[in-house]
Length: 126
Image 1: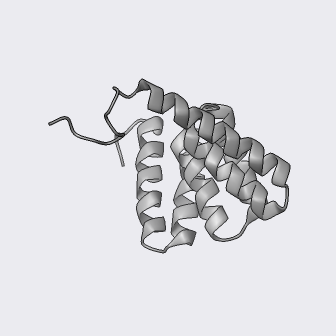
Image 2: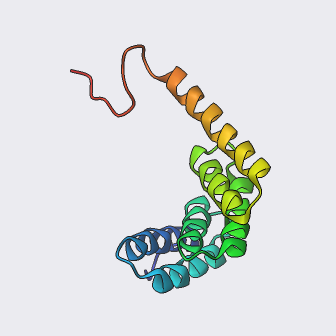
């Protein structure tokens, strides 16, 4: 990663960490995500991935901290609200879980309204 800016290095690390997590190496993923957020504390993808890895490891406090950081960076992201809903449910706070679940649904409806009529998300025009 020599020659890359710190922001580009952080993004590359976040991408690598996502692959590591998908391959089942949570420890390596967390190591790379920690490096990514140290290089770029505003890297939303790294914080969200960090929340998901901690969630998978059942580390609720760490998952919540990372999820809240991601939320502070992109408060209108469907995925972060979905993650926070799952985290809060595991922590036993149904009210907060439902709040974030509702936010994700509202944001999802907004996305649907932006799609052309009759077209499904991800559908290729024929």
